[in-house]
Image (cartoon, rainbow, N blue to C red; front, side):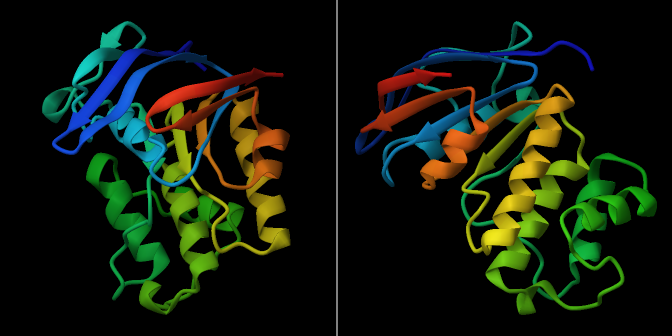
Length: 216
């Protein structure tokens, strides 16, 4: 795949309540998984939202292949993500939700949707409404939402929530498959085993600051 470089340079994000991010810097390139750990409120989700263009940074800059990320028309089109609790249309099936999302930016492709649903172990033919899904099924659907875009940069925010031991193993392997394809992957997880098993670099955040960095 094409070469990609994600650069986060001295990023700060300030809200009315105070600084949520302070001088965060890192780079990520093809075939790397960058992990982020920290307690709730440490800044992980705010950072991800800045990278996706959902929040405008207060200071610093975020670049993808030297192109500055912003909001509105400058929101990055080469990132697929799920952040916080995934939101779906509860009155529709998982298949229908993925069709709606995929058709927003692409032509209809049922075979592609079927392939991705099979990858995450969801029944393509099921008419079960997402409102009736278990937490684990919703999490699998959120993973499918990321994979379906085939974007070069993927962001997973607590992707193992609600999954049993077998589900965790399956999603870990899917993430590693995406890494082998050359994707840039950002991952936040409370599970230290996920971080240890998957990540090339790990940043620990506390009160919006990087307090530790580990490189394998």
